[in-house]
Length: 356
Image (tube, rainbow, N blue to C red; front, top):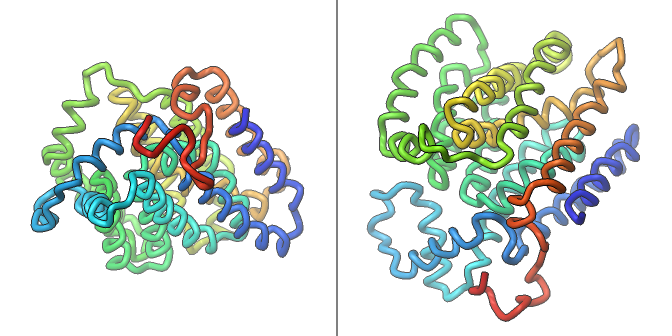
């Protein structure tokens, strides 16, 4: 019940502060800090806790000369440094959460409602990524900074942050396919160029080591991501909502980041279409797009919607709350991974950090 209570509290807090921009912006920093502590200092919480613990053990004899030869070198370098300093495994969670929340903050401060943007990330993205899939969580944080570079029309900066994110999780390299439109010139020719480059780009990703690994693990093997149909289904509905009701109003009100949100909405629809192929691949792609989904949802109140404006602004919160309530209360997977919530901020409960 803790997670559901916290989700409800965060959503109600945002609605209680509607129209109070100053108070909302001040509370944003408090909520950001508390969510960081909630994620970074958790203990034996998250489906991948033990998996990353074994990676931590494997980094005990990390060969620093191999950094340029291995996949996801930044992640392994961090684990190697933690081991070399004699620090315990939970420090890896602090490192990952730091990167994630720093990146989220960089994108949030560009939003008219940073608190709304932040709380919309909690029930799906924050719980699943920096609190479980910590490598991809760090990659998403850096991708948020790349999104800011995309909005600012700095293609080289965009490429830099995507490549840096790939040092944690190589799957993020798929976003390099957006480079042709990262100049902000969202024209038909540039979209055609992006589509043209996407063909060999996607082929290269699929035929490379990471693509072969994903194919062997997730396509035609019966491996499923628990709850993916619901999470990615919400993304599909978000894309539909954007294109049916918000697109023209967004272009009128927020033209500078229209390219990012419209391309992100297309990506959400594509993630949903990937579900029949592999729920894991569709789910992993979907997580990268949740920050854009939160941008869209948090900005609805400022769009010039003439009919049912309050309903449009409220539906995203209600929809996410419903999906999270069903997932958290009925899923054995959620209960196995996240309950009970424990923290080591005041000391390791039950003995020490190496027990799980």
